[in-house]
Amino acid sequence: MAVTRILFTAAQAAALTTLLSACAATPEKTPEASTEPAVFVSDYPTQDRIEYVFNCVAQHGGLTYITQYACGCKVDKIAEKMPFEEYDAAKTISYLKNLPGEGGSVFRDPKRAKDLRKKLKEAEDYAEKSCFVK
Image (tube, rainbow, N blue to C red; front, side, top):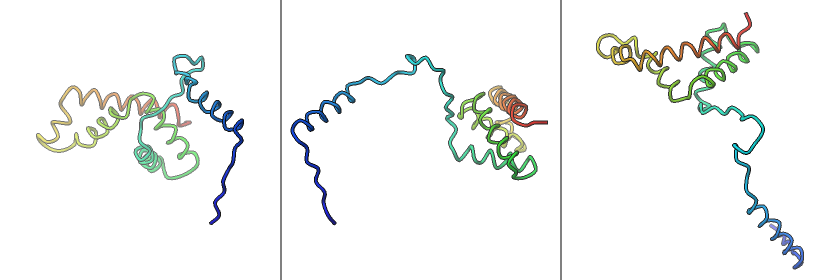
């Protein structure tokens, strides 16, 4: 294995040092200082997004380009309406509300559970209308 050494002249080294120190000293733009609109960034983990798309595709008749695109769109629209923590809690509550007896009542009866299920339903309805052409 050959080792390559890069030799700089004193002037080149000084110029490189000046350049690098200028880069480090240059403050970055903060989002508030930017005149461009903020880009939406989702906090949904990739695994949860993929799981949602797979379930959505299955519910809409199988994998086609249209269902794949629309279901990817749908999870993005849901992410616009609710943060992942709320989505995850609402999804869990929705799955577990059908447990019989007192075990299920913990997920059915509290106001917070009802509010989260309602918010998820509204977000899914919005996403369905926004992404699927009827």
